[in-house]
Image: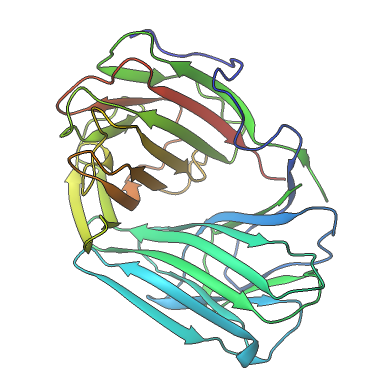
Amino acid sequence: MTPILGIMASQISGHLVAPNNYESIATVAVTTAVSSITFSSIPGTYKDLQIRGVGKAVSSGIWVTLKMNSDTTSGNYYAHRLLGNGTAASFGNNVGSSAGIDFTTFYPTGSTAFVTDILDYTSTNKAKTVRTLSGYDANGSGEFNYMSGYWAGTSAITTLTFGNTANFEQYTHFALYGVK
Amino acid sequence: MTAGATYTSIASTTLSSAASSVTFSSISGAYTDLVLVSVVICATDSANQRMTVNGSTTALYSTTRISGNGSTTASGRYSGLNYYLLTGGAINPPSTNGSQIIITNLMNYSNTTTDKTILVKAGNPTGSTYPGIEYNVELYRSTSAISSFVLTTDAANFSIGCTFSLYGIAAA
């Protein structure tokens, strides 16, 4: 089979995202351990946001939290999740904390990868929905986490703060994108 | 602050005849993540779909998955593999009755500081032998940037009409 080289025009009908409608907004690459990662002054010119990244924490199984704007009201955050730990599937749900939604878990071994969508983030008429696919594998351990989260705020989202009580390690990488 | 439009079509192919493998090579390192969208039918219902990167078939790959088939949910793990197991832990591409959609996210594929983690989501129509949905997180224990990969199955050829589309996403 002849390998596919270089750049070719897509031959399938329709793109996943129309050209020029998916833009990179900002990126954080951790060089020394930090306890939080913040995207601020997020422009309101997109329809949805997507955050993509990989990361590690100093300690095992620490929840990474996601806070919208500066809302520290724990009852404004909620999450449901479907988990697979390599042995059994399970489910869970919980009210958030003052740090926000329990977003995913980072570990010192392997790298947790995640793709997060925040839909209709500029709406002032409804609460916000967050959806995350995430997981890590460490060749003998690992977990897949499919989370649906909720923020009760009806303000447009202008700031996202990811927190981690165990610190985000070097080489953790978060990238924020806007979808028109 | 904004880096502009991204999510670029890198390469795409639709099989005009059955093939045992599909290769993407000379992949630019200019992006942050790669997204591979595969629409797959195989000659048999029992073929697992695999990916090897940079020509490596050593036992450096592993998988943790979760799946559901409409009746049960399950989770499994495979360690010390010689390939990324894109599907086959719980579902396999159909040979008839529709096609399997597989979206593979190769995260931070071009860095040379961390091992390579991918996220895979796949869905199969009912009417095939192994229907359902499957989500995998997979690891390749190498810090080398990914510049090529090969898709194969373990039991049958990819059928005519399969499509494979590769996109690059560049962070600011």
